[in-house]
Image 1 (spheres, rainbow, N blue to C red):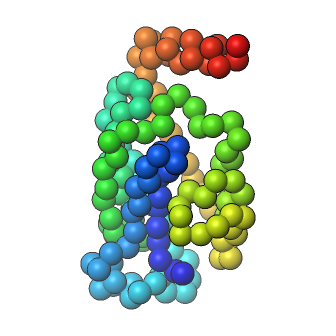
Image 2: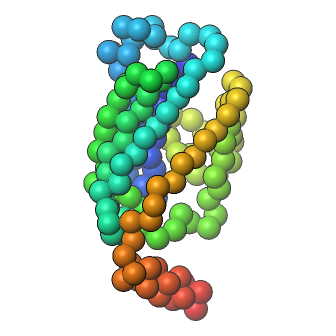
Image 3: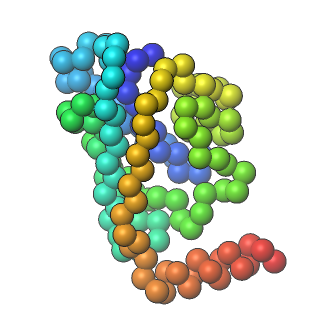
Length: 137
């Protein structure tokens, strides 16, 4: 509906949603104006360690729209039956505001994902390897 939103789905246990609020309407109206926009989501992890929280900021064209904190992030791995979809959601809906399959009807000109350095200690890597080995049994 033309409103920038970012939702973090913590394994269907908890969802955190960032969206343009009242302050954003002052400069963008109820929805984004037609044309190209740069939408950013910047997440700062509170590591080192496994499944720590962090804070995220949703921006449009360089202006901050929403800031939220997470208590936890997904430990280890995303479930194997989920997919990393861009422009379409084919599995579990990230957000309850739509049903799958869901297709974005706009145009995505570019997607950039920047991963920071790993914040896991050697001990954390061992825990992950042990958990993956147990899951394979």
